[in-house]
Image 1 (spheres, rainbow, N blue to C red):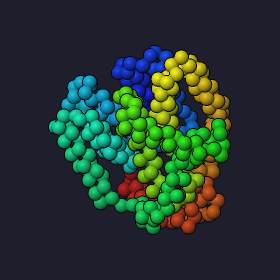
Image 2: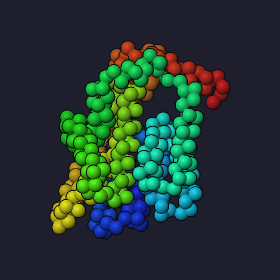
Image 3: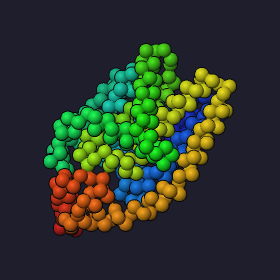
Image 4: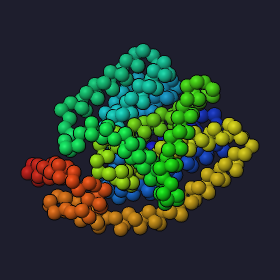
Length: 341
């Protein structure tokens, strides 16, 4: 997490021409969001480090692609960009989607043909390697079933990002997330129409948001049958807070350009919002502590086949669709015990 925040802060310091006040504000926003305790599942469960690593790798790859023309040695940076989708996917399946964003950056920036060909080929090969002989963990709920519910997918994505605001503005999560997506679309359309030019760092923020939306979409396709409420899980706050940091950076830069004289007031409002979030930290910690025991009991019940409706509610799951996944987990667990792993 520190590497994640440090990389973004370094790029802001070294490769941007924003005034010092803007740089410090953006650095503060990214650091605050990346280290936010709302992602407590990923901070307290050792195996959840994969959620953090996947997005750190993806961010470093996007930064490398955006700033490739000025980074050295270029061949080493190109190798990192080429390998990053597969490295991210080893931690989280959605990490593979960063390859789509990297290809968009490569073609948009008109990078040398050899580099473009190398990165494109590496992404195709890594995608094929990852997807080869892929077995869905729950064959009872194929992706086609989720695709037949576009409204459910949209609500899931809005919940995925909106959950960051639950403790500050309860019951307003989804409208806030919807407004954020509309704002992002407004920025992107304006940039594509060249009505306003974006800096390289702003393109990084747009790319980051695009990647995180793709991850949220992939998560919705795979998890929608567990219910929309499952999108409130704290492990999803790692990408969600990164999304809000990137979008907030875009909004702050736009505000500085339009009202430079009023930027100190905007900084004050940003700090007040962050302090309001800090006020919720004790509640987040209490929620984390109180969540551990019922979660452990629910997991044991699933593995033993003694789960009930309360177990399903604890796991944000639909009890009618739990058995295929539970059987899959028991099979993996038994294999590991048998093989002594």
